[in-house]
Image 1 (tube, one colour):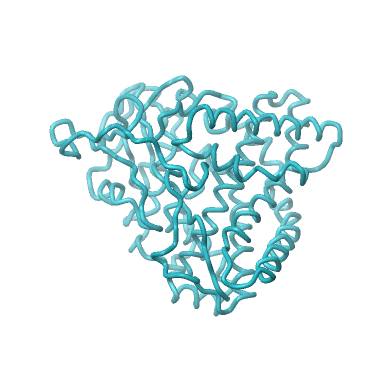
Image 2: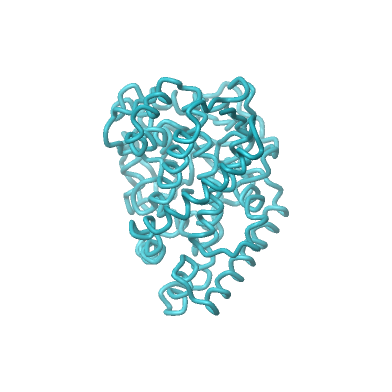
Length: 420
């Protein structure tokens, strides 16, 4: 499902080496500048046309890293146990952020099997198909209530304010069992935590606030047991299946990413449809295609800035025509894999007729997103409800006037003004 105030700007990075990409060393420099709307990163496009493996540097951190962009290479790196996320803890590698990437192995993001398997097994108890069916009526009622409020406000209205922001926050809070009084500042927390360039002191303070709130939630659930994710985590913690640090880390990650990533990606989907009228009309005429369309939009939309988390090679590995040495960082770009023309013909085009789509927007291998079913459900509800209620839904301003977040890990519009 896997963020800063929306006006925050990254700190000024070090100047790029001259003449990039560097012909003498073969190391490409990636400045990670903000891109317009849903434009695909030209750096990744270029790497897809280059050799299968490329050395590159980002503005912060040490040394260079290997970048994999082809679908099969990305699939191998993200499923091969010779590449570790846990080894990132305490290391400084080339990065888009001036802050340390990893500091806690209790996090799902920085755990390796077999410990990762235990943590995922616990969380999966709250993400079954049965639990999603149970959540869906409440999620639908939330979407309907929010859109009733938008209609009362009147057109034009901002879909981010009225729907994309509060809806995923409410759904993930319901999943976790977060009381209403604890939800007020959660969007602001997510914005700061997910900001690569947020001031270190501010980011640390916010993370501590989130942690304290999550601990309070888990303590509340121990006193008042319920069948929600907080209850699942407390039960696993009390039985010794997971530690306190792991319970807190998992609840925090799901809360922050569930609220922030779905907010932006669902807004991206609606923007993509409103700027592709043929595809919009296709879904109006064939609403049964919405689940398939959601997967194609997930493949098409470049939802992240950058390439995500690296892995560290535990031994020398021959891959993509190069030798990756033990200890080197390898970045596998899910974004680029989703645009590999050998797997997705005409990858830069939205095509709802691709059939089953094995995209990597939710990751791959042991770190495949545990909340993918929930994110899909939310996206389907948003599209189904908007298309049903508003046959004349349209942008209220020219597409080029939409303001987009800057300096954010997850791309998305700041506002999405619409009429209906």
